[in-house]
Image (cartoon, rainbow over all chains, first blue to last red):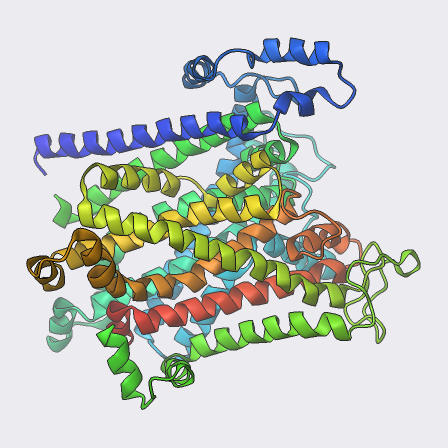
Length: 337
Length: 297
């Protein structure tokens, strides 16, 4: 792709991304305006009218809507979401502390789910309409249908309560150990770096169940998508030609995978967005204490500063994923150059 | 429509509704299984709560957390209520959310997509940017945040889910409309002197209906799942309503201390219902989406 076209492509994508972030900014602002009266909830039932009035002023709720939005937008873009109404600490600090925990969960879950999903999807396509294909179709629909929190509870019921293979889903480390010094934010790596093998082991054990839950929910739609893509490729002229020429099966399969790669990356990118929601629920069920757990707790408690911070962080993260996916597809797809 | 007609006729069915359903069932085993699951859930949720000797809403303090037995097939929950009765009663809430949500989404999404796809221009641009924004954000978190802010009522849940879902229908209808606009139907309809609204509704809309119908079941599955999730997080229907998500939450707290039944059975019921809808949706897509059908062979 010539440099000019590439710059234009990038500019267009960045504009779309900026519009999306702006829309989310407006949406998060409106979200708080939707509530009947946050101050009444916040101040509690025993607050006097004078106290409520003082709180209004303190939160800036006595100004006009437009003024409020401008103030909000200016602060939010500078990363200042105010303080959590519950903990009283700055929302940005709380988010920054928790983000690594979520990223750790997400990376393992997506990696495992994508590899398993692509492998099964390709196999299902090669053995189309065979028993493997039929069974994986039903399994994939089941994984697609199961409510996330129920999957989490089910895994805990089976692997913790019944089989006693897994530790209880109570956070990222057994309460027997104290957290290793902060380096990467991942207790497994930090434990290894600090030379505390038992800490790293305990952290890894805590990771297994939530990662498997995310992987299952990630793999289910991937199987279906990869199967459809691979079937398209298998029926194409170049594969038929290759077959007619007596190309070995392994080489044919590599060609199929190579041709499906770009749409798979695009699909996984889209999946990643909905998996952010999945991860939040899994974090909640396993008391993970990451970003998603924080955001969901804030939504449930009506802690709107924290909700705004969480939603905006999530939106920026998702936009970044989309841009990254575009660039990766550009790099691996010769046709788009 | 011609595609379905020939398909139905090729299976030897008459034009009657029963004949058509039978012919569709012939086309896709997975859709038949899904439809059967849904019919079973609907029938049992209407009949079984009346046959049961227990009331789905009456607490029984002396019967708390009884394990499954001959008297209580699915055991009792923390309030001593019969889980069996409540599980079957609970299906009603899922239908109550899913059906209006999907109808609302189609009612809003289809005209928007039709207009945007046919006319293009600014309306199209705005619609696409709006739906783009919805695509870059996890729908479940958005639904949770909005319903939490609006206040948990059945109406708010349906409105929120319906509007979020409308974006998906709008995109779908828009894409098909644009594809049709390039074809001969639209051109000849315009040449024959039809006004724009007539071209859209009489000539374009019937041709996008199939794609729309193919999506309904999958979207209903989403609505059931999300509304139960809302209840699970305490921002949906409120206790003591026998709603599955809520029951999973109440039961889930005790699931890992031995009283597994109060959370497990409603969870399985929810899974079965979503599975039924997704089976049906998957089969419908096979039948109605010509591109996919050709691939299925």
